Length: 280
Length: 68
Image 1 (cartoon, rainbow over the protein chains, first blue to last red):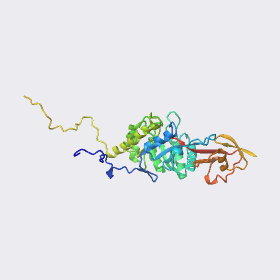
Image 2: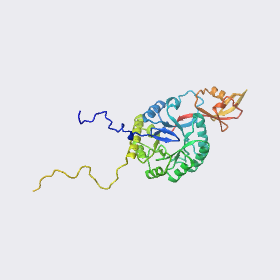
Image 3: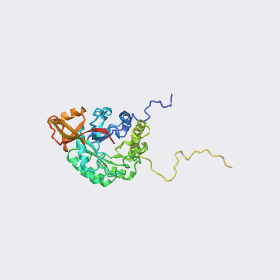
Image 4: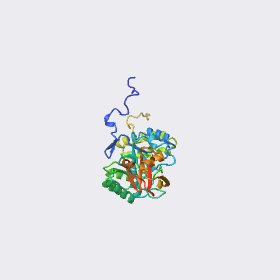
């Protein structure tokens, strides 16, 4: 066995304390997983449960909707994704005005009993791009009412800074339109938002596959929020696992620091000591 | 004597003097994680039993479902 690394040796650096991810903190709450996942668009609740388990996420977004009065006994999300194990982050999906968003989150606070929420106020289809004027209005009302607001926003550094100064606890610019799977369309603006932020930055919306999530993390995001990329994958549970690995890899790559880019080749093997055919 | 109210956009009749808590029981909602809004005002859980419904009240009863 001499000289051959043992299979169980800590070659991945897990034993090196310096390499253990401490996680990230939002509004005083610490999370080890840097992946936040949605709970919508799955085939059924058991699949939701399995995918979220595989993702390793500790925080999940949830929607607030009317109870079905004709069948109040139907299975409920909280039976499959228990709120005592996962931090529920209620959203305002489907809200197109500040007033609707604030009303929805007040109901969410009453239903769940917590203040940490995801604010999103959307513009019209087909892009559902964040309506920033309405988002500012709703954020101000929610913060005044004691909410801790994680805010979905445009990839606009000026708007992002203003939301932070208002008191939002996390800034969540879109990578690309909701559910589009187009990835991070403007990495330069995401990087600009991260560079100036003093609160966590998450790319929210647009992630399509694992490499998109890794890229977002390589840019320096604190975490990534996604839903459809897992729920609409051919095999959601496997994609959930891929996303977990991608977010971890992207974070490590960001911390490690990438090598410089070069337009020309730079060989890795020594250029000296090459064997030569003798020339006469 | 019944009174007419609106719950989640549907017309519904409840006994006169019924409370929010009694309405939830009539619907069969034992779930702990619902929230109730009456005429645009939240009815806190602690006030469900003491809040009497009036004719024409508009209620929203919501809970958490899957979402992104």
